[in-house]
Amino acid sequence: MAKKALVVYFTWTNGNTERIAQALQQALQADLLKITAPDDYHEDYDTVVRQSQEEIRRGYRPRIEPAQADLSAYDIIAIGSPTWWYSVAPPVSTFLETHDFTGKLVVPFTTNGGWPGHAINDIRKACAGATFLPDLAVKFDSTGGSQLVSSPEEINRWIQAVVKAADQQAEG
Ligand SMILES: Cc1cc2nc3c(=O)[nH]c(=O)nc-3n(C[C@H](O)[C@H](O)[C@H](O)COP(=O)(O)O)c2cc1C
Image 1 (cartoon, rainbow, N blue to C red):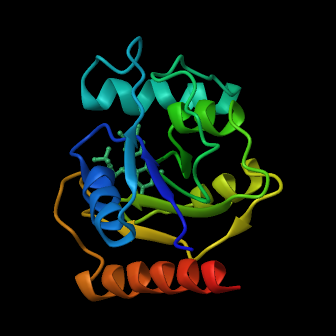
Image 2 (image 1 turned 180 degrees about the vertical axis):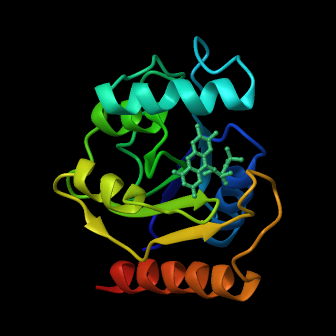
């Protein structure tokens, strides 16, 4: 039976992560869930960049909406985050730490400006008990803009690899 997929993501600067989330959603015929942090990140870019360094250092976990997502209907959970200070954005950490990924097939993906750091690995570490499908760190321009630097072919290859791995899991 086909696997049911959910693509969860946070985006803040340009919708870069949203763009990748939507492409994956279409290929997997997945549901899409955007998480927001309504109390945070209302300041300008430079202020948010500065503040979030300290937040990430001390492990700040902002309140997110929705606070809880029902993952029980899904076999595959793709989790997308912009890279913030070489890690995932704090709202994604909140999501990861308040949901159970045991037995799920998890697809980590991130976007970045050229310094991907350990963001993919941080998603993997936070999903205890999950099995991982192919992941991807997608590069956008180094000035924090919306210009895609990774090749569209690389993104398509990754999406096809995820779809294929999901099909194999469904057959097995
Ligand atoms: C607070 C903050 C921290 C960032 N830290 C990094 C970083 O460590 N490495 C990197 O390559 N890009 C970094 N960036 C750039 C973003 O990862 C990149 O622009 C991303 O594609 C934005 O995705 P979005 O439009 O979905 O928010 C940072 C951006 C912000 C706002």
